[in-house]
Image (tube, rainbow, N blue to C red; front, top):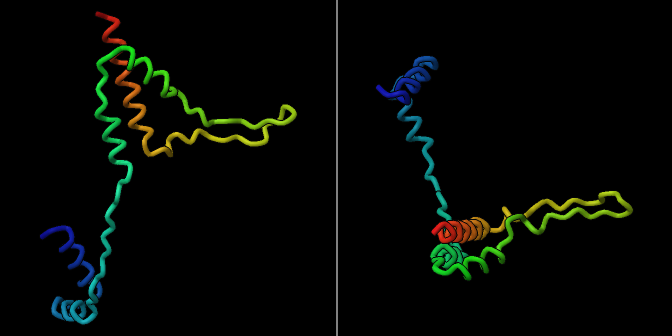
Length: 119
């Protein structure tokens, strides 16, 4: 006897309904379920896969990519007027759908540069 059967039998015994009556109630009030399946279409998948498949084989290319991708989010700003902060814009890089792929590419470039400088 499983947990579901145990709970079901406890409910039936508490309400003093027999299994036959309960099955007839289930079949009487059973309505068909309509389930919608949403298919995700990832339009950025080719760009993500391209970024993930870039191989770093040259230290010049690694330096260029490392300089192009910022380490911190460049969009975080504080708007001040007369030495008072009017508006603070939070870093929005985490909302970028390609952010993780760019950070992985930057990390691969940094590790390549660290490995080549050791040898």
